[in-house]
Image 1 (tube, one colour):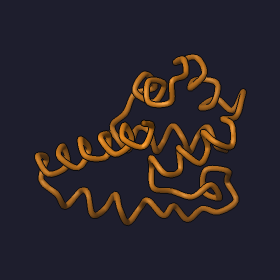
Image 2 (cartoon, helix red, strand yellow):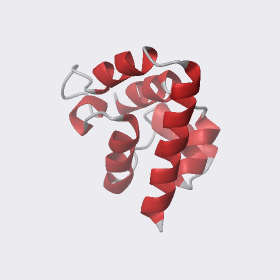
Image 3 (tube, one colour):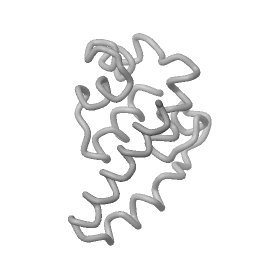
Image 4 (cartoon, helix red, strand yellow):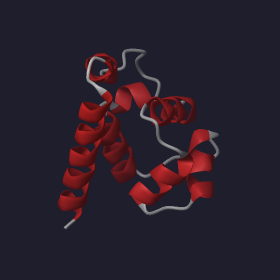
Length: 100
């Protein structure tokens, strides 16, 4: 279940498997195994994925069908492309800053 939902969230956020691999310092084949449900991310990575996509672990794990990121996604769709790009750059900066 996690694989299908992870792939869906990644695509909805306009990211490739390579983007996700870079963000989590893993290989593209590792992301592929997650998305094919051949392996699962660690608990730490699962939490980071939830934060990245604004969803819950319950949703990613298939314990609920309610995706908390749906409302955030709807709000983002109302933004202009430039506003969306600015928001994405800011999110990337915050993720980078958190790692330091």
